Image (cartoon, rainbow, N blue to C red; front, side, top):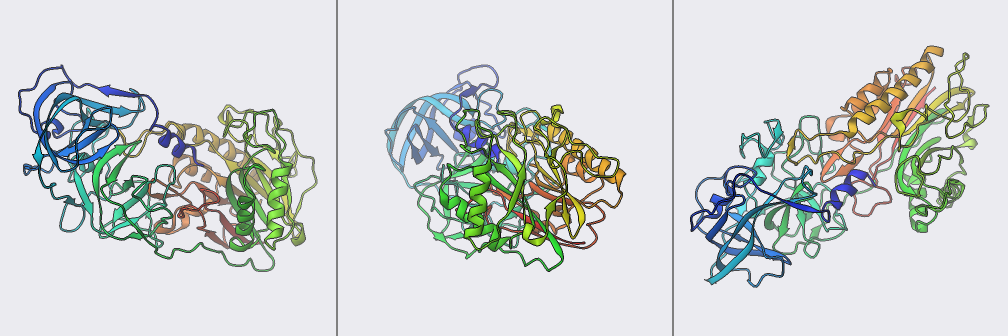
Length: 594
């Protein structure tokens, strides 16, 4: 699994802090909710004691309740809803009209240094029930209501809590903030990400939203200058339907309360929804014509023999039926023979063997494999798992490894004067600090039709530690990108060495680069020069992964000039858009004419 998703989910249980803006004073009462929310990301009354705050209870959870002013003003920039933090189960019901006295606080999950936004709350409350009252009509999102910005997250750079410039009509992050704690409804929600079972989350947009780049399969594509701020995530495991795939619709409108959890805005549903299946099918590529070499890349998500046999069977079937048994497959996230058991084991022969057996069971060929064991605990990933990259290749098609001895885990492969490799396969500059706690790239020289082709398998550093797109820092800071850019430079320089020895060298660079096609890392690598195939696709087709509703490129295949003139290329969507996955990445394949 992509690490950034794990970290975002984990912030739900990490230490939280309360943020106070300005001096602590007592605000004269009664106070309206809109006075507390203000026209900013932090309350102008944060730290103050407020009295007589009136509202109708619109939703409950185990630690408090939401309430909303039934008599709003006409200013869209000021939210009319708020969460009242009771710590224990609240003693109110939906529909109760109440007044609340308490302290205005800003709740930030993840600690003081977290890039998450805060949620404005009233804490240590004294609640008085006045009676009952009809709930306010939910704000319509989309045509006939409020339309969220569809490209700009925040026009003003900096910390949104201090930089000013609050404009919900222009900035997506301000738009949802202006609805914090309020009842809203999406009349025609459509899923742009699959159901996530851990928290029951489904990213959606309203289907009449004028999104800039929707994929042909119903998703929404992340682009360099379009962070898709119109996405909101349906939340509530008891009310979201399981099994939802990208492009699925629902039995009715999605109505609920706008909240913010773990780096993204969510809709806490007021009532359950049912799935309306769009019929999305897993893709298959075309057969490789005789005489052509197909090369695929596939992140198999922490694969090891402790995984259920069905995972191996499904991955084997995908390689055979959906990828059409490629000539060479670069694999990422192959773990050692006992997976997360941290006992010094680094061998992965059982892992490769089980996958090869699953391929033959699915009717495919018997692949050979090659790889280099890492040094125990040095390549990052799941502790004890010792993930690494490696190759499968088809000897039945006449594909073979060029002569040579496999290198060791700390031995740097070099280019020989004749344009070959000093060891085969070999790791590229494994002692370089750029690869600390990261998978080292592996290069192998293969022969096809007696012609050499160099394939470089990669799995670069994850995005763990980067800011969320909808976080306080805009644009989102990505400290991990510096490391990937250094890694890109190492691989680029090795490719240049191959090209210096033979300007017509056939080179394929493939794998999970953990970065976008427009990133500095990807463009640095392409400067070898190489053609980055995902970047050649139309915008609506550029994705190999879906994260929080954003379809995006993380996996790449790049070709040297000698291979880039005539090829066939597919991203084969079999995982990322589906609730049931065998990996969280989609594989890719290129068919090469020699």
